[in-house]
Image 1 (tube, rainbow over the protein chains, first blue to last red):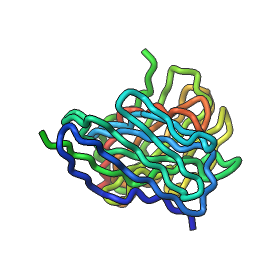
Image 2 (image 1 turned 45 degrees about the horizontal axis):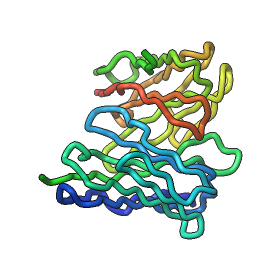
Image 3 (image 1 turned 90 degrees about the vertical axis):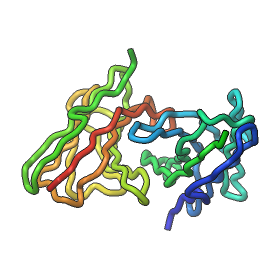
Image 4 (image 1 turned 45 degrees about the vertical axis):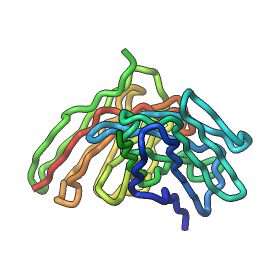
Length: 113
Length: 112
C-alpha cells in the first residue's frame, strides 16, 4: 500500500543549528513533492515544491532535496530561529495522472533559544 | 486580497442534523479540495474537484458530499453528521493539483 512517512513526530533543535526533516514514501512515483508549514490551529502554508528531475531547491534559509531512488525528500532549515517552530508537512500526488494530494503526518519542530 | 474563506469557523451540532460548510476562493483556481485533520492521523483528503461539475473521492469520503456548481465555491455537506466527524476541516485551492495549495483558515466542527 502507499505510504508517506515523516520519520519524526517531534524534533527539538538549538537556535542557530540546522534542522533536517525527512519525508519517505513507498509505492508512489511522484513527479512533484511539496513542503508546507503549519502553525497550531491554522491552515498549512506552502513553502517549496521540488520536481522529480530536480535534486535540490533553495529558498532563503530553506533547502529541499529529492532522491527518487531512495524515495526520500530532506527538508533543511539553516540558522534556525525560534520563529521556525511549527509543524512541517510533506505532500505528493498519488501517482502519474493522479489528482489526489496526500500529506504526511508532519514533524513538529521546536527551536530552543 | 487573494484568499480562501470558509464558513462557519466553529460549529457545534448534534448527530443527524444536516450541515454545510462553505468554501470560496477568489483566485480563479480550478483545483479545490477538502481535508480533515485529526490528532495522530494528519491531514486527510476528503474530496477534490478538478473543475466545475468534476469531483472525485479522496481518502476518506464516507459521510460527506460535495458539489462544484461554480468555479469559486466548493461546499462540503454532511447529510447526517456523526460524532466521528468531529474534526478540524480545511478547504484548499490551487491552479493545478501539483501546484501550491492555498488553504482556508479551517472550520472546527464538533458533533455531539
